[in-house]
Image (tube, rainbow, N blue to C red; front, side, top):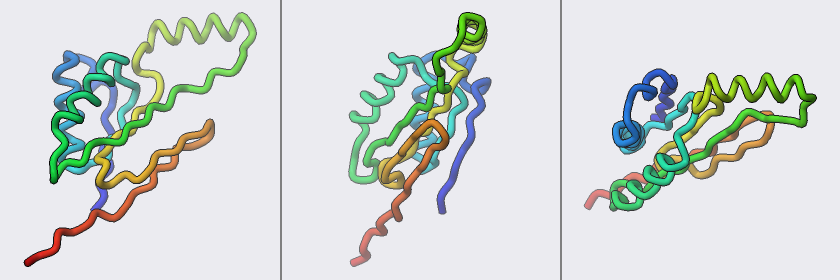
Length: 128
């Protein structure tokens, strides 16, 4: 069974970097595909990937991760000012982060209009 778990930004907002990474990695290791409102800081994203590499095993094959940022087209001065104010107020809440176990996610594609998540059937171990 495929499980998608939506995590609102408020759920990780009060956590420190270590707790955020631990929480998200725990969900992925429980074989859930996580849709996080917002995004991690660049350092947190790098640490999540580093930690994942350390924990790869026969059972845990790693993660797939994709961040979708709000599309910003060239705007007139007034819109640029409005976008900058939104950035200051919302910060890391803008965008969407999708992550899940590499054993389930085959590919994540994104374009301006949609995110496509391709999954693969989890291989069952042969019994002897």
